Length: 253
Length: 320
Image 1 (cartoon, each protein chain N blue to C red):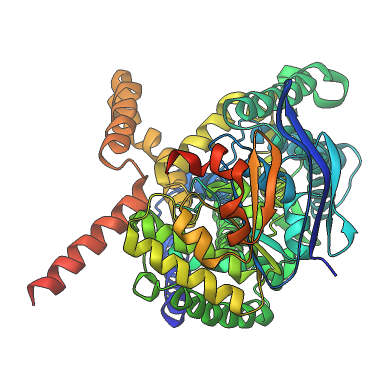
Image 2: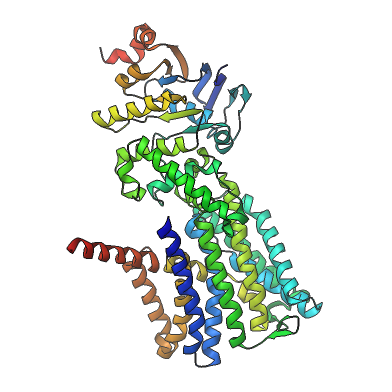
């Protein structure tokens, strides 16, 4: 069984083909990277998969169910979660509350129980708080548990997004440039977090520019160029592909 | 968690004590009247603060909801002899339903556009109340029978004080409960980042609609009661300026603070009464005070004061 099937997916923005006729699959339990030069359509692809954008053509299957056109919150309920290239942190909340929002789908969200604070609300929140603290420790943020999100440094917020996404207990986690803007040490630490996440059985899809990181942790790489698939395969295969070298890595060598 | 719990009950207890003891300091009917008006405004503003302060949406049309409920109660009770409590509940249901129907299209808008749309809504309601003179008495307004529950009849401000005080306490309790729950966090998440809220499973439309309806129902309950209390209503009460005044109370007291909403209502309702002694300078001084508060306490009175207290106490601890 495949976890995600993308079939003939296309997205146009006023005549510009951001994604053209793209087809690929993602197997469960793998770390899958999507690379490509700037403007290749990586983030657009993320937005199409997670329901932020609606495709112009083609379809997406998640766990063999067609999910094209579903809203992001409906996809989240089916087990999809993500982070953002440009941070999308709830700056009006504490770090811990950010992670607690990630538990939303697993908590009682009835309006009357909340207004009259039935005991179940308190119980659910206490359990969720324990879990959220564990998750913050898991991504290396234990010292920020009591902090307001808007007081935290950039690198910590990158991880906070991962903790929040994990709180939803996703089957598929999409990370949009988790190492962008981080220094080498921080990058390495994010690396470790991603490996730990994958080791727990969560399928990870990664958009990343840090080639060293991509080559090191990916099971499978998809290369995009101008919204089309250039090639895909294992890191070794991709590294040797002449098209990839020309379009992307060529500038390095 | 424990400290959050206890601080919540401490606040609620303090509020209860203030409400219980305040009448000892109130000398005459006029002062009771102001206290009752403060209570009415505070309840509306607590609801509006859930929408504006917590969920980050805006409404310049809530006076319309209050007006609709006020007229519904006035007409059904005074003309058709409905029991006031039944009218109040029916009005709240109808206003809630109306808010539910218009919330979806209106709350798709953001920022200035949402402000314009809700402003339009308020103006439409106010025009209808003015024009349907056969039903509403038009610009002249209409008289309203007093509020009765069975044989009980509420007339004097002194009697109303206890009903409004109890309802205010209830509104604060409900608001604090809601905010400290998964629903409350979802509302704040909508404010923080809608797209991030959606990708972790928050149905942002549902929560925006819910909080809009809830705040409209708060305004509706106050509208029904106020109609009986004042015993006379006119379309002015449903007008644009009333809506703006409530928004100012939210901002002045402090966005995303339930007690801030209460403080905002206290100050904006009581201050003009205090300043009447200044006669011609009243409005000037009033404006000046508003400006100074917003410059010196940009987050509103309660959040800014809270931050100040924390800074002072952490300094004191650091000195040990």
